[in-house]
Image (cartoon, rainbow, N blue to C red; front, side, top):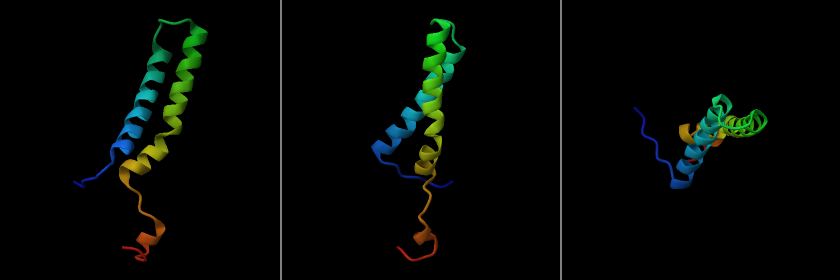
Length: 74
């Protein structure tokens, strides 16, 4: 198993994007708000969470730069 070290801001970014996605999906399937309000808020949060999935994954899985893959940096 590979250990990854993340800074506090990186962890906060990853956690907040996952929370936004979960909150958006929860709003879409809940029945507590008016349908139009629920749909708008749910789609906005789910869209935000979905759009930030790729940057969060790059942070979490630590993609190396192309220079380090070529062995040009330490």
